[in-house]
Image (cartoon, rainbow, N blue to C red):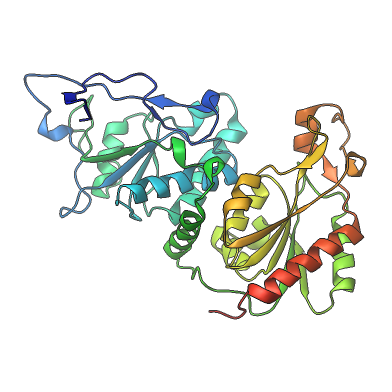
Length: 372
């Protein structure tokens, strides 16, 4: 219970806690508790059994922020959950995560996004918890949450049919997302270490030798001259290993993370494809090719708040003009959203060379190579 001026509060406003981590009020998903008063009390079988009889299970209820996008899951959902657990001294790698609505209800009628939502949740959650996620709107949720707690296959008893009670339930992702990154550099590094360690990856390892990776993106926000850029970098910097690939082609999320830890400089378009850069090694450099903002008439950082406050990775933003943006057939140059999502930058090779040299100066001065 909460105390306010010496009085116990038993009624809560509808806009009490935000289940969704985003800075805009219009994106909020509000939740508030309802006090149930019953002379009979709570049935004993309404409580979810402990997975470990010696300690209560940590349960986290949240509303995912566009979970069909990898970047939103790792930056807008899992980072806030890490902070929420840490702030209460309840950080654990076996928390039970409960999304407020299942993927099919979040993306009603959108089969592809529903599939992507489930795919990314299953792929990315092991860095935070060893448990499979549950959805509060799933059919037979009470049975499933008890089965998960018991480590069963779903056949556990239902207990109280319409009531499920938790010893520990954490709620309130609102203030913890990457949009509110100012001053959170220590939290980002702790998240980096916690996440990688849970996957059996050493978060302190660094590349054996200098390597520049160009992240290839197809479709939205692709670079218009990837091949030309890579060829130029290889000729200009023969002492560096220059790789160019789609990171997702490496055979799995863990393989992608291990590859990133062997990268000293990453060149990437902005958006979801760039978000795995938070798992670069200490003192790596990140060169982001942002999008062109028609409203501000300037190339603009989509995740600038994150990169400016990450702390352990040095960001560089590649500047460009509207004339350097190409649009795929069927997409408008005059529409803000179309330009943001589909604009493809033709990178000026000499300008990029200048930025790469600055990134090299940073890594040469600050990165310790060869840590295992």
